[in-house]
Length: 399
Image (cartoon, rainbow, N blue to C red):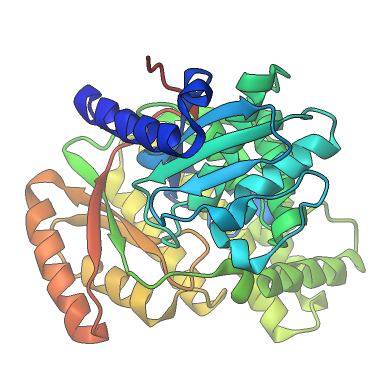
């Protein structure tokens, strides 16, 4: 988003904020942005103590936020034009399905209050260009932008990693989604033109230049929203934990992400359930693919990187069973295109997006041909976005 577009967004937020909360509150408001993220490879490895390789993207969620002397925290979504259902009394904040999107910022606020960081109330207006339910971390973006706003307005100066952990805790406890750290970490810690190789067990990380040459990152949205709490996400995590416990009957194991392929082959006969075996096999092999993929990217071997993206999708389809007909259709159609270097589902699955590395001159044909093929196979319209890696959450100066 260029400077003119940024100012236009800021002015729309400012006008709505003033309409809702008044000019005096607007004079105290500040503007914040948190990006979405795309994970290039390393899916369902974060909560298994493995490695992931995400980058922040240019799409995201904006928030204009001001401290309030009122007893209530008031939230408004410009995208949904929802407001009244999000007025919640402090001290009485519990998860309410009727609040839908507002549970995420409220969960962060509640978590910060429980840890003694936050005592006052807020007025906030949110707007985003990140498609909801597309597997691009809209939930993490609204969590992190809320946490960053609270941190900046109330001056408790959390380190960025601690902010990410606080937002993850809010989603685990308040929303009931037992997610790993990847999404919040990538949103909070992103860096322009880089992806992050993150060890989710230790939080050790390094930035890897995202050098794609003449290729582009293209996101293909299946336009089938995934509802993680309604999906088998927690079931998959439980399967991995059960497999890990089975292997621990043979010898101590830190996590699935700590195992080499040889170690898994040695210990896997102790896994009782065939389903749990497949889930664990994905977690172990995906972790190894991720480490290998980063090495290949740093060596400039995009074609080999792309082959590992395909292997990742196939493992997610066959062993983890989280793709579904829509994401499989998008991936298979992409693999058939001559201008595609690599393609796979990204995010938790059960709907959402694929991430595709496409030669620059082939992007237009890719969107047209994959879109037509997808409509023929599923009856759905796909949406396409050329994504750019960008910095993490930040305050945006605005007078």
